[in-house]
Image (cartoon, rainbow, N blue to C red):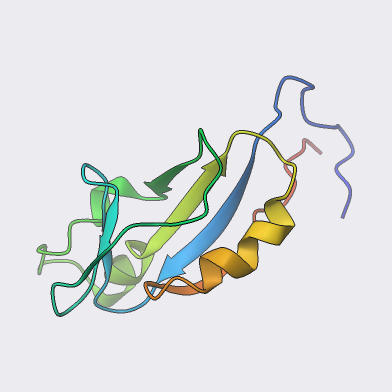
Length: 113
């Protein structure tokens, strides 16, 4: 699908949407993935200026037991925000190879109707 109104020219970045495997979480402050057994893994092969963030930060705390199963599932979604759109497709298999990631894909193109 092509957007009927293209995104602004100053929007140069792209993001990759990904989902954590059950039991894993991303520690934003330390920039590492933490596994269910306490293993710690740093994300590798990201371009300079890339960052990782939760899609729904308020649901990302792994210690919140009061969340519904649907909220816990939403709390597993991340986005890798890239400084440029070049090479985003080539980076998807790299991100999918990380032990903490269940699935990853390039985010859809945005646009106005």
